[in-house]
Length: 319
Image (cartoon, rainbow, N blue to C red; front, side):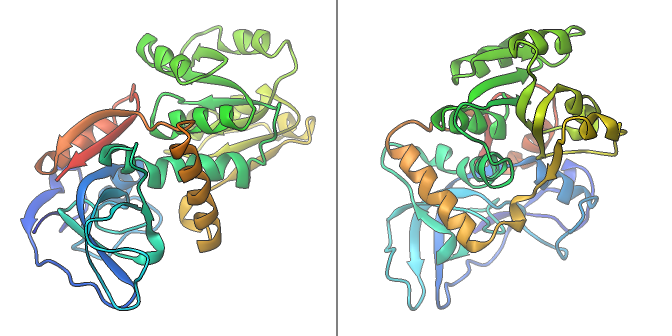
C-alpha cells in the first residue's frame, strides 16, 4: 500500500510517498481502507521535530481518517468488512490503509461524507473537550472563539451554538468572517482590526466574555485576559511560541488560564465525546466544513496550506 513516510524531521519536503506492507489486524484491531485522512496543525509541528513529543523515525503522520472496514482481528464483533467508519487517535492515517484499535473506531453516520468523517477526530474532539471538559461552558454564557474559521474553530462554533452559548467568532479575512457567520456565530470580528478590543467591548455591552477558546496564544493571550468577564476562563488550544502576560489582568477577575491537548483525554472522555458528536451528526446540528482536498502524494502541499493564515474549514488528504 502507499503511505507518506518521514525519515527525517524538517519542512514539508520530508513527506515522501512510499510503498509499505499492508498491516494485518491482531486481536482487538481493525484494518480500515481510508477514503480520506485529516490534516491537522499538530502534524506540522511533529514533522518539524519541534513538538514536545516526537515519534521514532521513520513514521507515517496522521491521526484522523474515514473509510471502510477491510478486516477485523479476533474479538472484534462490533464491526465487519465494508462498514463505514471514522477513526481517531490512529497513528499513520496519511496512507491508503490504517491499523487501529477497535476502541478508536466509530460508525460513520450515513449522512456524513468520508471527507467530513476525517474532520471529526482532532478538530471536533478538540473543540468539544476545550468547550466542555476544560472550559466548563454553560448555556447562556458568551464565548469568544479566536480563529473561528479553521477546522477547530468551525467545530467550536457549531458545538457552542448547539449548547446554547452566545458566540463571538474571529477571522482574518472577509471570506473567513462570512464562513464564521454562516456557521452560526452571533457576532463576527476581524482579529486584525485595530479597533478589535473596542468592538468586542461593544458586542458584550461592556461585560466581557465568559470563555475564550484560543488557537494562537502566542499572539493573543496577553490581550485575552483583558477581554474576560469576572470568573472568566481562557482555554489554550494552540500556541507557536512564548507570550508575555500581566497576571493582574487575571487576578482582578478571578480568571483562569487553562491549557489542553487532546492527547491527555482519557479513553472514557473520548468515548463520551464521540457519542455526543455522533448524536449531533445524525440530527445535522453538526456539519464538518471541508475547505480543500489534496491527493495523498500532495501531502507536502497540504502542510504548506495548513500553515498559511486564512484557513477556512478542514484540509483533508484523499488516498
